[in-house]
Length: 137
Image 1 (tube, helix red, strand yellow):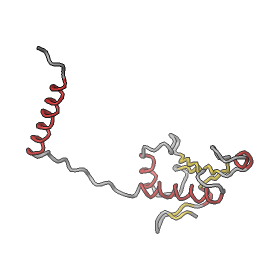
Image 2: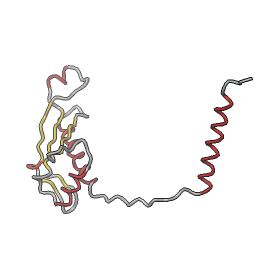
Image 3: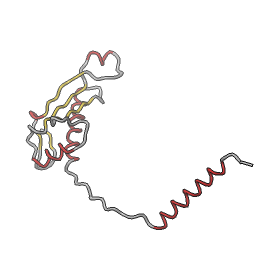
């Protein structure tokens, strides 16, 4: 059981964990042991509230497929147990990130002095470049 908040949790049967071989350096151990974890979680068939489902499907995240599957590959650690824990924590963080409401951005206008300073710096930079040119007699 993966706890998301006080009211929301994900049952173990909803999360599919598969052990796979890790990539990269590691000597003979990499070739023998399946220590990496491949986590698969389907958003549509989950027991998450509709609010979470809608927000997750709207996310522009490479870990979420078009079919609504969240795929996480954990291979940071040498042991399968640590990678399993890491994958579950990353899934939990992804789902929790959806609950945070972004503040609406208020458009502001640049002050007159900041605009003037920017234009002065532009002219000064242009003058420096003009002085670098070849002198024409």
